[in-house]
Image 1: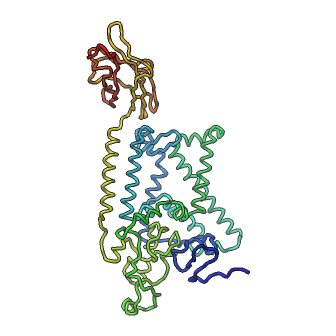
Image 2: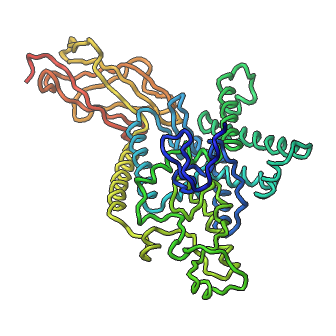
Image 3: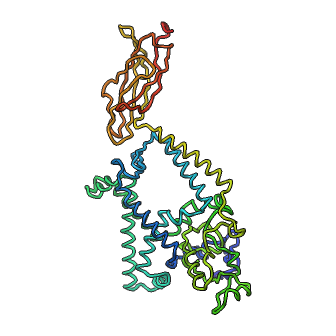
Length: 488
């Protein structure tokens, strides 16, 4: 005997550890039915001032994203994250593993920035600048509207039998989706390998680039899966940012919010009903048209309050404003506001928590600026040769042998010069000379000689300056070893 389905508001105890109240939005996902199957969303096409603004912002950001791999600054890419070769380029500046402290500080700065921004403005990033949202809502969703039509047409097509027309539309749409996924995957790959390497992979013998081609296919399939099938679930199930809300948001955070004081109690709009009559009847401004729900790309009802699934896309604001216009009520029933703004009419406040976050952010910003400002183009290490003792020449001079490693972080060759600073003696580079090829590590030996009278004991601190074209690049500290006797 089959188990009867529960009524919408009744607790469901079918095999669950806890009773589920299907009338409470907190007890279930808006994108899953009672059997755990996915409910495919067909959000209505949004239209309004915020959607227009987001469209213009998306044009700018998507243009930067797709053109970025081909932009060069001083011959270097705008952005390159070459994990395989441990080479990173940001705004044309090359960073290497030797710059780990800069990378770590930049990451701390980035995450602190997220804390500050999210505590003040909620998920503004998700709705306006996140690549997932931009590509899903401003590219793939618009293509879907153009091919399948608006929400009601999409639902009708989904429920229609498989005819030639439906088969053609599905094949046409997914062919475009796959082609776009290929472009997006290759764009991401060009940020990892570089546009030149990507061009080589696509034009050279495929057998010479099996690893690159494997990643090319893998990235294409991943992005196709995300934008054609996974969609909003990437934001609600995978992205951890939404889960940060519970600790980052407070009553002063500005989010997309429903003004329940103005909107409740909900009641359908009656024809020829004036706002005064509606107010006298105890009804709020919300006419329960559910337009805010039908446009939501994650399927939530913003009237239930701030929810993890909300990406602050503002579609519900535009939908509600359009309805308020039609019934001649003020806009802003759904708007950017804080909880205190709705309950107490307070403006956005600069809270103590935000001050602390901002202070940390400011300190990290200064630290990062100092690290970048003092970053040298040539990283030099100078160590005494293992096992080598000091030598005494027939003229009575003392010599020490060192091993030297120099790493050129720039994209051009550097001719360096070594100078002893504050130490009277001579320094010579043995072997290959002092030319350091671009983006290469060179190793060699250095011989330093001095008079016995210049030594301060068995070990004498010493500083070697590294110069290029007369400009000091960095200073390296080491010690000079001499005899225990015959020294002051």
